[in-house]
Length: 98
Image (cartoon, rainbow, N blue to C red):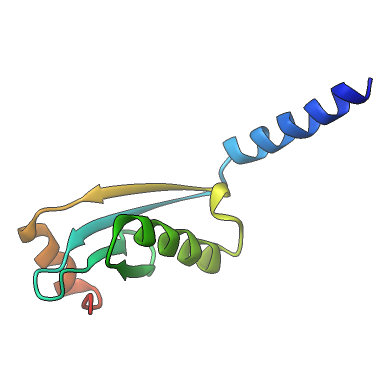
């Protein structure tokens, strides 16, 4: 019986993680001047940047948790990599990535 209880905990965690409360999409581009990888929220004012993809993902997770005040696993995060032209448009409407 106790084996079933531990499995129930795992199922509960998977259920909670699969039922996201929010969704956020980031436009991701490399800033030509600084060389940093920048992420800018499309529908939310969430912006971050880093020198590598691994660190960028860490910063995105932290920023999402801070903005929504929930663990990032409860938020569906989508990344859209954009071209130089699209990146310039992102810079024109959002904060510069430097």
